[in-house]
Image 1: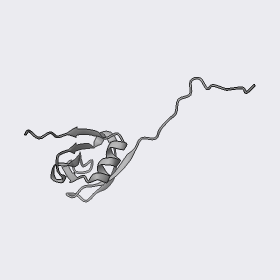
Image 2: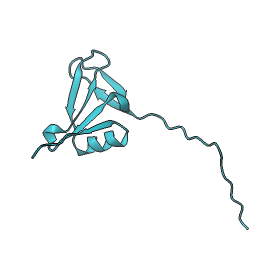
Image 3: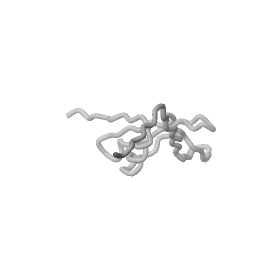
Image 4: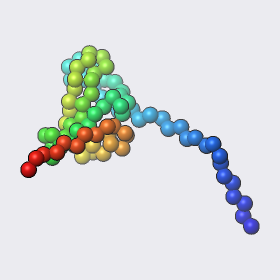
Length: 87
């Protein structure tokens, strides 16, 4: 007969995901947590982008997001807004 052990009260700690970013205005480079970024997914490449506020200069930054960026940001827990078009 095999003996089985069970762990009670086990809590896994997961390190927060950080994303490297840069500001085109002040040219600072920094890391942002998932909750500092926003992702908008539209019907085309022109309407799919991510945005954040530069922690150095306070500028609002908006950058295009291709398929790979969308995959990384959604996988890392970034809040996503799906933009719908009216027919």
